[in-house]
Image (cartoon, rainbow, N blue to C red; front, side, top):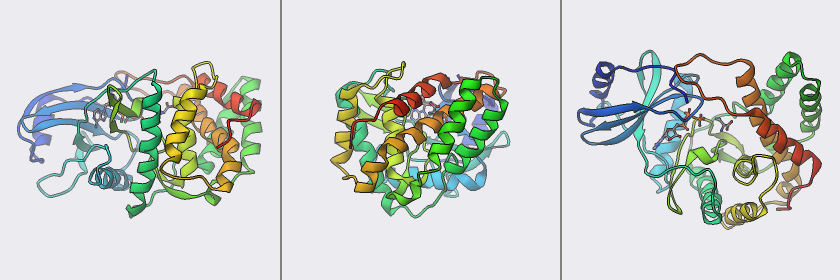
Length: 313
Ligand SMILES: Nc1ncnc2c1ncn2[C@@H]1O[C@H](COP(=O)(O)OP(=O)(O)OP(=O)(O)O)[C@@H](O)[C@H]1O
Ligand SMILES: N[C@@H](CCO)C(=O)O
């Protein structure tokens, strides 16, 4: 659970006066999430989520908030950011950049059924299409350069020879693929199960756009299937995979270059999350309640991709 920055009742009451949302009714810190501080906030005019950005700076945020606004206004189920009386959607609280966004209904699922996987695949395809008309641009902060630099750092730091060898070897293999040669667009880049909300089998929300960026569309699908279609022990769930990939394809057909790059793109996506989790274990952050995810789960997924070819696209 993660609440890095505490907010008092008085601070929040004052903060909310900037927005046309009515007086504060109640608020509560949110346990899930590992990056930012989040609170559920109820006011007389609605239900909101307040985010205090712990690692992102002001200059980065207009891209993410603008994207959520762009998608929500096209009917995509992302949370619309609230605007202040002055018309801005980015403010400050406790010396941190802050935003207030609509609270979406629904719950994330730990064990998705096939219909839910289908809906996620379709939603990802729709996101890629709807975002084509978004004019913002942002490089992937967890792209190839980050993977290489972080991999080298963790490889030097670890005392585990097996981890060192796997990182070094995988980085060497990843040098052979250039994701920028594949079809590009704005991607979510973190569409894990905890970032999708459902009411029964109906997808009601896609949240956490704070890794969104311009990158390979296929990489976004790889991030998504790695989380949704693998068991904790690293084995593939073929029915979920087929449901998700098939639904994505109903919105966008793959190119030949994407079909051949698929095995390495899956590995790049697995490596990214293995490294970020390993980094958080190696260099833990201070906080009131801090949730760190298990890096080993992603080491197993990476190993699986190295040992067995994935189902073809
Ligand atoms: N717009 C929203 N509507 C409803 N619930 C939300 C919304 N935004 C966030 N939440 C809730 O807050 C939790 C944490 O949000 P989020 O996933 O954005 O955390 P984070 O720390 O910013 O990101 P990460 O997933 O990268 O750790 C979510 O799991 C969800 O329960
Ligand atoms: N989705 C990420 C955390 C936030 O980027 C993970 O599961 O490691």
